[in-house]
Length: 338
Image 1: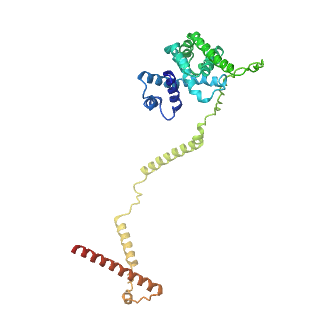
Image 2: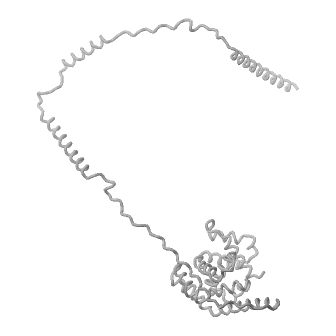
């Protein structure tokens, strides 16, 4: 296995195993690079793998536009197991082509299957795809200036060299098919019908989420009492205040001769009458009868058959416990002597 093929394979495995809902990308990269698969790599290779995995995760929405569109149009015959492979190649073309260079990038392409790489790169660098719907879909995800300066411009700058790589891949694919045909017996070559090629399926536009209707707010009068009740309460408090003022005024202006307080002589007479009435109502309490003497005597209890059996079982159980305790004491005494 070549060095470049191994790097791509490790990127594919790391991307397939990554689960963003369980771990963050930094924590996952640290554990993945310490696994047995990556122990033999040098520091530069580990940095390359970590940058590819982090970039594929960061620009996942942009890369998915290309890969999903490829599977809808030119990549219908490829398996979903190659999804991570196409994501890695798409990331290298979109973001790392200027850094790697076409000659270094060609080594990654040559380490993979020629048919897959030819189909994918031909789809990506097709002007009907790149400059039309792919670019429009990228504008929906990121700002126009970012897409133009960081993705479209570097790809178009190396477009001629990449088209040369695509033509070389096409020659390899056609040479393979011719070699296979020449090795077999000569048969009549069927020619396809000249049918109109179907148009590539457009990426479906997302459906608009219906907005909720704007409801009128609840009126404040719902949480407040009626105005009539407040007016009645206000009038009631005013009337009560006026009545209290009039009472205080009447108390202040009453005649001093009309005192209702009783004299000391009258108070003493009332107390004497109450005392005499209470003395008449007093009575002697009844004395309780003494307890009968026969209650303290021992009255014999007559047992029935069931009571006799229970009593006998209880006595037998107590005797057995006493015998066991004596046997234990005898055994301990013998052991001490021995």
